[in-house]
Image 1 (cartoon, rainbow, N blue to C red):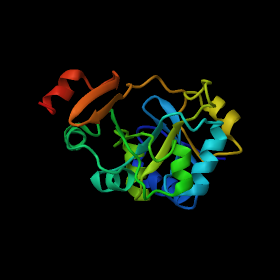
Image 2 (cartoon, helix red, strand yellow):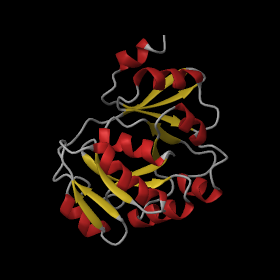
Image 3 (tube, rainbow, N blue to C red):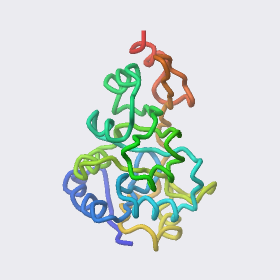
Image 4 (cartoon, rainbow, N blue to C red):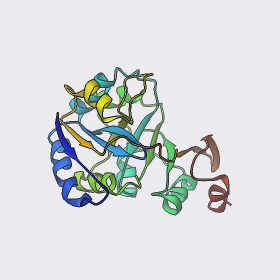
Length: 213
């Protein structure tokens, strides 16, 4: 595991190029994002996705999170996105709003299986963190994201724990020190134009209502 020290004063775009290179070559990268460390893999890379899942000991039925950089990538990730969901994304992203969608049938079958199957749902959003946004843009394709902890265990805010747990699985670790908890994203599911809040978070019900009236 290569480790790079990072601070808010650093240039996110410059670092994003090195991170993107690791991901594009099929590696895993662990980055600070919204108060926790998260592991990233290119969503369309079957081997990288399998490695991420194995590193976490993750069960396939657990919800998956994908970061995108705009509607073009949303079309790669999801089939038949509800128009109201599109409007919410356009209006509120990159605020912490995760929208549930049905994964695209064009994704590799082995990836779909890891995401829970073609009829499952995944969460998508545009990240607000400057470094992570730069990475998604630099890679040029959607990224599968998972918190840097073993299944049902904590430690995703501690560099020491991340190194101990994932030293042999992650290729690049961006260390920003111990992280304070960040805002929790609001998670919504939109069906037939109706918005169901699955988890309350930083984006309020008032904000959602303003763009679904």
